[in-house]
Length: 112
Image (cartoon, rainbow, N blue to C red; front, side, top):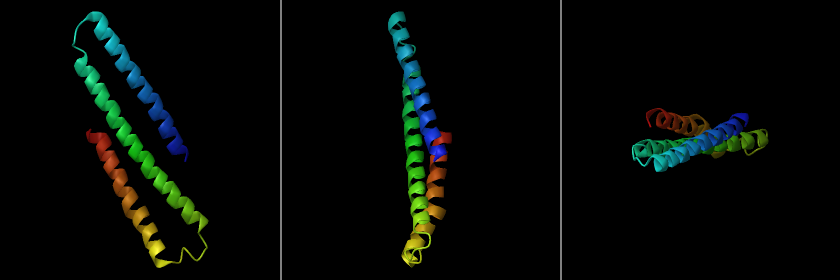
């Protein structure tokens, strides 16, 4: 939970810095009258969009993991946990879905 909150906070701060830098470059471009900074502005916009996509997917994955963890903890000793289909769902989500999604997001972070 702390990781999720710190991730969102740091994403917000970085996103604000990127957008302020884009605004400053646009003002500088208007004042100087040159269009040399258009490539930098478009690169920063793409970086901001990719950052939003990656962070939002991480937040979704972590939210699913938190929901699964809390439901597992809540139904820890109930008869629901001994249901075969419920156990298979937990195993598939925890051991396959979440790690695969996290690796895809990390791949997206590295190669975009």
